[in-house]
Image (cartoon, rainbow, N blue to C red; front, side, top):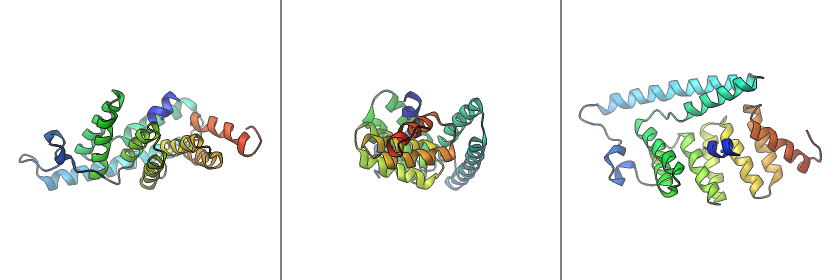
Length: 206
């Protein structure tokens, strides 16, 4: 979610209600719904296993180049939901966001969450929109949901820390940076944030 903020610094009706057939989650005549759902569930489980293995490696590595590569692979893995419909919505949402069509992005992320509420990255990406709009309560709620479904979502933890900094809650921000560093010890935004806030909260520099 906060990936765009991190790099530069990182429920509404179902898709069928929008009238765009490209978003329709229902089974087609050519693809039996049960078979498609089963295949998507298997893909989601396999992808989650991949992301967990990558997260294990990310925590263990001491090499910055390797950490950067693993981080990119993890972000890519998190963008695969296991649902073709949700993946399409996420792609649309990110494209809308890049083009500064925030209403379109919000609508796409809302629909992704409605279809697959346990998909952490949809909550995480929508939190970016709320954060940038100054809707901090909504952003916190979405980040909490992202972390509930993916406790090792370092991007959500860093986003939470940045948000707490924005509302002058340094102790809470420092705790969130610490959580991020437990997962991704070489995350530059978290390293810098912890160094900055440790002076404020504890009166010392790292």
